[in-house]
Every structure is written in structure tokens, then in C-alpha cells.
Length: 151
Image (tube, rainbow, N blue to C red; front, side):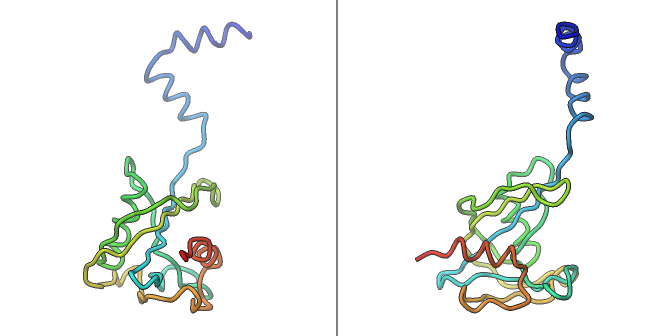
């Protein structure tokens, strides 16, 4: 059996191997978060319509599209949710998330644009100083902001 399985595997080749691998392994979605700062060091926070009423405030987030580079997910999500342009920076978190989700977070710098929130997803968008964050902020996002404070 020890030698039979590798032989069978090599006989399968190509797309059939990939289909077996796909069926045998976990499927993930990738949640991407942006810690967006302006020139004053303030952080962009959004009051999300679809999040918990206890903790509706959080950083811009979304799911990566198939084949999308995660840095570009930050750019796209911020643009879709706020109309603002950002330049992605360094990776600040990569971890497994809830169930079939991986979590990725990047720093990002505000680069311009006019604030125009997506009313389907977002109730409000505001800049906050890192020492004056709203109480209704997601705790994981509070930790992300604190871990990325620049001196």
C-alpha cells in the first residue's frame, strides 16, 4: 500500500490530481482589513450597517475576489465603501479566522478622493485619533489599530 498510492498518484496527472486535492482540502475565503491612516495619523473607521448593533464600528473590510492580490482588496474595498483612494502598505496580520476564513490585514495610507459612503453597507465614516476610538469598535480592530500605531 505504501508504494501503491504514490504510483496511482503519478498515473493520475494534471487536472485529476488537482480535483482530488481540491476535494480533500479545506476551502477558504479571505477576509481583508485595511488600517487606513491620513497624514495626521488618524484612522478611518466605518459604522457598518450589517454588523452587530453592539459593535458596528470597524476598519474597512471585505473579502478577496478570486485571483485578487490582497493589497488590491484593501484598495477596492475602501473605494467601494467610502469613495476614498488608498495606497496599501505593509502586511500587519495574517491568521486563520472563523471556520473557513483566513484573515489578512494591511496598513494603508489615505491618498485622496471624496468621501461618499455606500449606504447599503455603511452608515457613517469618520477619522479617529488612535487614542479616541469609539467604544462600539470591534475589539479585534482596536487591537489592530493599537499594534500599528506609528511613533
